[in-house]
Length: 161
Image (cartoon, one colour):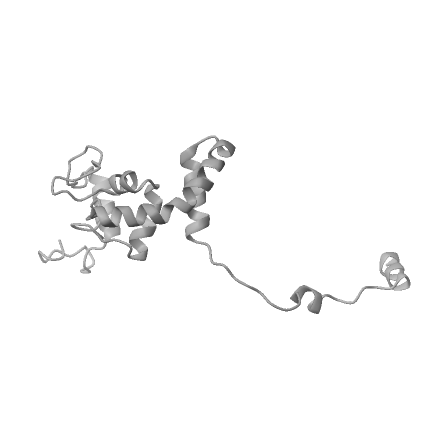
């Protein structure tokens, strides 16, 4: 609408919130590539949807979003709000799958604990992919900043007050 010269009532350009409000208030559906049906694993042009990439890589959709954010492979949207389309070659799939094997063995052990493999995978993805190893050296700061211990007499005085 902004490209066509339309402005909101106050003369400002439209924002996403304005469009959402208008669609909600007037019941205007969003335009999707595939109409109202669910996203397919692969689009007609051969690119992958997020769900399709997750299935091809053997990870959860959240992990696919993490991979996209890290730039491990490319994905694009035709416009904001449209489903992502990702080009994945066989080499990229093999490379990304090889990198996820470290969590696969751990994940299988946790599936029984959580009862639901999807929940176990999501938790492990969040922990492993967002973890940073920090090596600390030296004495604990808690020991250095701890107040001195009270003597028996001082402790008795505090408790009597």
